[in-house]
Length: 415
Image 1 (spheres, helix red, strand yellow):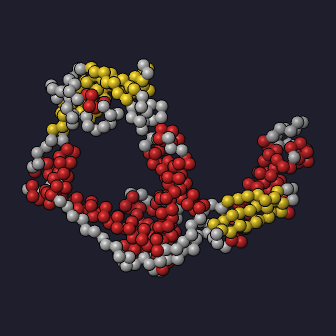
Image 2 (tube, rainbow, N blue to C red):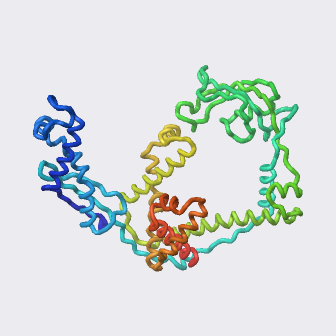
Image 3 (cartoon, one colour):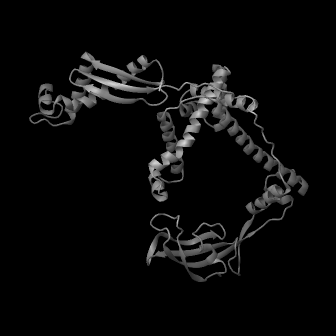
């Protein structure tokens, strides 16, 4: 492809000799040469014993940065992804590096205005308002102990339980005083249904099967649970009145009609945000389809790796390791990579599209505007400007984000 450049850089003479000498001093401190203390063997003795080849890789590390700078100077562009490196030749006199560099692909911007797309306006039905009010009532419902009676759907049963598979205790399948909301589908199918009708103090045996889509070593297997109900709690739904409005933070609302209007506004705002996002996605999709660009597989792979890293960080926040996730779900790293490729391609296309729009529209910001934006963002995040710039990397990245947001606004406002 036109945006791929292969550059050979040969380091020889004094520079290569110095790199080898530095490697020798390091290796000599690490290895024991018979008859000498570590670090004390003369170079001629070291080379006779270990061979000059033992210095090559450390010498390469010593000279790599300089070779890369030379390659960048010769390429006359900044690679969009990490260059690949091969060593074509290496001996006592010289080393030849082969850098394969990929620049940003050429983008031919197509039509991105007047795409014939229509932005929808959010509408809210009476049924949606009633449903939202029911949700709010449930959110403020109190959980109160039932003095008598049986477990019903919607109740929270406080249970002791223990599971057995093949007559042996199920690993992680035991709990005491566990609050289980009946109907939440927290446990495997049949477990919660089996508890319905039980009374406080009652013990019951549930004979169930793990689903076929469960973890590999348990899917489809028979399992027995011994369950004892310790306590039953029920939800007490509040009445819709002024106290209810205040509990929701609506201090100025006095009537049910005013409350329903406020709920309608909240729903409309939420739905409009969703419709705006969908409209923006349509604009991006249509405009990127009109754009011409040939994207290297290596660029897509690089974006996939970035996405996997982000996914790994998200899992980490939940206390899950990526290798545990792949083991439990049966998802190999290769499958995960393949699964993310379409989204990665879309992200790269959108990025190049917005960069092209920013260039076509001559979008730019002064140093003062970038500084003001940095200050605003830092205040919004509740951190110092120094902390924000450390997270971002530099003012230039803040400026880049500003350009991308402005390009998005132009795309949205002209369709």
